[in-house]
Every structure is written in C-alpha cells, then in structure tokens.
Image 1 (cartoon, rainbow, N blue to C red):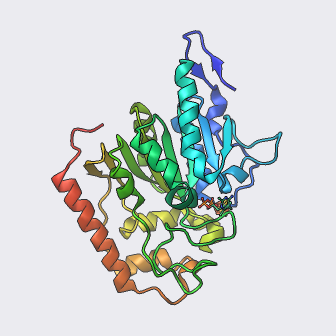
Image 2 (image 1 turned 90 degrees about the vertical axis):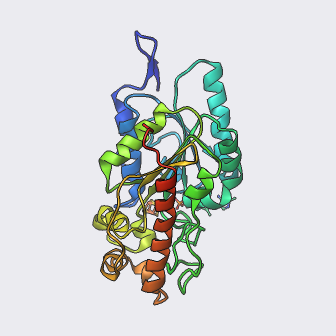
Length: 307
Ligand SMILES: Cc1ncc(C[n+]2csc(CCOP(=O)(O)OP(=O)(O)O)c2C)c(N)n1
Ligand code: SF4
C-alpha cells in the first residue's frame, strides 16, 4: 500500500516495480504480463490506482483475499471502466493525492463493449491513462472475434476467417483531440518505457495501445510472442507512432514497404491465420493504405516540437 515519504510524496516502495507479482495465472508468453511489468517499472515508484474491467487482466488478480497485483485494483463492468477511473481520479484530486489513475483493459472492453464511457471520458479530457492491451480477440471467454481482430483471422465466431478489417481505434481516439495517444510494442522496450513515462508527464486523457500477443488465442508458441509482435511492426501491420492533441503526428519507426515474405514471417507462425481465407495482396493493400494515411498526417501535421 502507499506510504508517505519525508518529502510528503506518495510512493509505493520498491514493490511497485513489480506491479504484476510472480505466480499469477497468465498463460506463458502472454503479452499482458510483460506489459504490466514494464508499466510497473515506468511508474518509477508511484503508486497507481488501477481499474480493470472484465478481461484476462482481472482474472490475473486471482481469488480474494490474495492478489497478483501490488497496487489497488478496482474491478469494473465492461461498460463502466473509464467512468470508474474518472471517479477515482476525482477523489484523488479532492484529497490532493498524487496517484496516476490507470485503466487497463482488453480490446473487447475498449474497441467494443466499453467504448461509450471511453469516448465520454476522452471527450471530457478526464485526467486518466487508458491502456488497452490489444490481443485482437475476446481471450478470456475462449477467443471470439472483436472489432480489433484483423482481416483473415479465424476465431470461434469467425471460423472461416474474419471478413472485416481491424477497427482503427487510434484514429477514433485522435478524433477526440486528447492530449496524447500512442501505440506500443513489447518488442520495443525503450520506446515502450519512454511512451509510458511521457504519458505520465501530460495532464488529461491519455490513450496507449499495446499490441499484446496471446499464444492461446493466436495459436502460436509462447516463446515466439515477442518475435511475433516485432514481425508485425516490421511488416508495417502495427505502426509505432504518437498523436499529440489529436492533430500532431510522430512516426517512431518506419519499416520497409510490405512484402509477401515479411507478411509470411508474421502470419505463418500463428495457426489463427490458417483458415485459408488470407489474401496476401489484400493484406498488403491495407498496410499500404494505413501507411499512406499515417505518412500524410505526419507530413502535414508533424509533431516535431512535442516531448
Ligand atoms: C457485458 C458483458 N458481456 C460479456 C461478458 C463476458 N466476458 C467476460 S471477459 C470477456 C472477454 C473480454 O475480452 P477482452 O476485453 O478483449 O479481454 P481479454 O479477455 O482478451 O483479455 C467477455 C466477453 C461480460 N463479463 N460482460
Ligand atoms: S488467454 Fe491470452 S490474453 Fe488471456 S492470459 Fe492467456 S495469453 Fe494472456
């Protein structure tokens, strides 16, 4: 629990570097585990208040009275996660406490079921950090499709391969003109930590999107998780970039133009792509279109002066 130092600062001591404790229930190779460990590291000793809606991340906590989290965690319904975080932040501000309030949610809770309160909190520019670990699936309930599931992926509710493209949640969040939005990859540790720290320097609504491998749902090997998300950055599928005030763009890494070989390196190691519905030309076309959009935004609305 939090303590007050001589300087009057609230901190959580060294254990906060391990926001996620050992012995938790996450599957081997789960991207969420590394994400939580690095989140704890980037908090630099600050005690966060965490809100987690229904998802694997709330199962991670374990059964009361034990918990795998070393910070206070409020379990919320899908629909209310961002609203609960708004309330917690209001209480900390009233009490003049300095706790980063963090929402930690899956893509089902973010792109789909919780998007109403997410949008409302973003529009009000509430002072919270909303982090979506995007495993592109409803992992906790056995792997149904979400609107974050990419084109061609087979899930229990899209067994022949998903026919629709992944929703562009970053564009949706940028349209709220929030102070900061960024994409993060567990294959790029320095960039990951920098963005978490940058988010904490900014007041208002901050949105972070982590590409989070899920060996159980992706039907991949746990030891390949980090490589997989690196390949997705390398082939252009998951761009690393930041958006400031909804209008100034900064691209953090520019991969070579997509090739069938680069796509194959990513998809061939995941049995979720083996429905036979994957059209590589269509796949490459969507990556090119995404990059045309990002390049235009970064050229026309550069964030050169941003932190
Ligand atoms: C309103 C509501 N609908 C459905 C559920 C059942 N449910 C619990 S967890 C979950 C999947 C969550 O998926 P996601 O947010 O992507 O997180 P993940 O499980 O992948 O970690 C679902 C559908 C629920 N708890 N509440
Ligand atoms: S099902 Fe996927 S997201 Fe859930 S704990 Fe396992 S690897 Fe992680």
